[in-house]
Image (cartoon, rainbow, N blue to C red; front, top):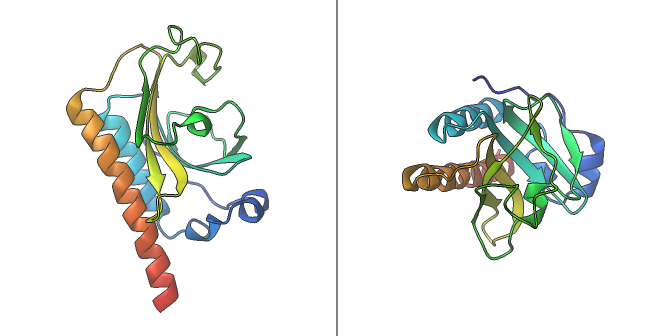
Length: 170
């Protein structure tokens, strides 16, 4: 499962997101791709995404198993409905969940039935993205997979802080 490399961040995201400088011209693309690939493997999920979000837009930074899409509108997306107080959010069966049963996320023509995501936050707690996995089969992550998903999101957070520090020093 190879992650798809992203080239440029669209102007729409740059002008709409106050955090976009952390990701723009990222030399971390290979790093993000490795995290996405490992997350997909560890969670045994056909789709894994690193997305950065703002009020209007979802930017897909890295992806495994998802059609090549860079930007989506945030309305109705799983990463746009992330509970404010939680660092982790899981929907075991989207069809059995009355709030999310109408969500239309498809994987190779089949509706996604499972979603798990871990917040990507800045040091002061601002939500800027989500590391997520999807599957067409209803299920849950086991405790180890849950911990790894959260851990990988923390690694992304630390890489963004490091990148910001390096850019300020150099």
